[in-house]
Length: 454
Image (cartoon, rainbow, N blue to C red; front, side, top):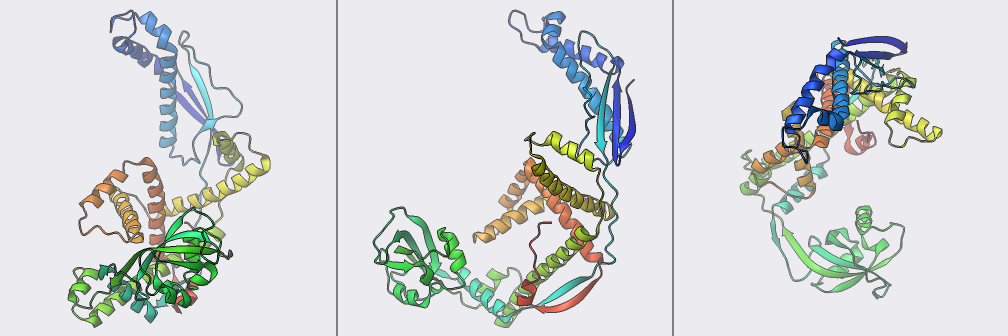
């Protein structure tokens, strides 16, 4: 009968000895040989009539080793489960001891020796943290800008023959040129699609009256408005410091006539709210912005919590075991010592944070259910669609199908599990930490934002 024993060999580091007897694996091994003989398709023999000796000679060793290892792995797993051990990673071979050599012609008892690292206990204390929940004042221009954007989004699109207004949209084909517009590189750059109002005033005037196939010369450092420069240079793939010229050819002109402020428009922006007046519509826009700013405030509070947890929670790991575990599992086995030390510090930091999250998840009984994965997939899809101004036209069946299919993607499920679990932990903490509320304007609030990936 199989036995499993354990002895401590260091801080949160144990040795586990698994002993397997012949009686544990031999019956299943012999049964497996017989089943294989019935199914084997070997040239020179009728199916199901292959002699046992031939099967044993050809496949006996691999079937034997598989049988022994399955019994050993089950015994080890059952022991860890029954003892309720929270491991760091998985069990690894102990020291330099060789695992037993197996011979199907000489069945015997086998002993396997492993070492395991135990997850440290973590004491999380948020009671001494000073946390501020910011109430962000809604800038009036936010409301005006959102209304203007909505009117354009739901307005009537047309393609006039010439540029007549700063709100027109132009699509330009771009080539490098000299100051006179002579093309210096025939490689066509990424097309530039931009509202006329995002050009500098001097170039807005040049664009007026232009039609398809007309050209103009753009001097990069003078052509665009200050707020849009970073985005445009990134789109063009050039360094902002470069003083270069482009020959731009108008390929398309578009115009989005703003939607009228009426009930039809209000209901397109806020379906189901039955908004009837401009005042009600403006209030709804302001409420939506307020909700968005409240979300940003909540994320900033969570960032405060993250820093408190990271800076004030002690977690002591079995370092020597962890180093052996990493070296055994890393892809490049001959990492230089200084590189490995840096890698270990990074890994230890991740493990530390993971241990804190695990402790809090247990404390607040956080679970991740199928519906969580489905909603997570839908949110990612909707975010993608919004970024590219796409909509589902109110038909959600394909979205549901997409979410269900994503559950078949192992990488998506693993990544989502971590993201959902962490989000649930922070949502739980958000409700219990003591905070001081402080009113703040948006520009000041922006200076308090961090960009950590929790």
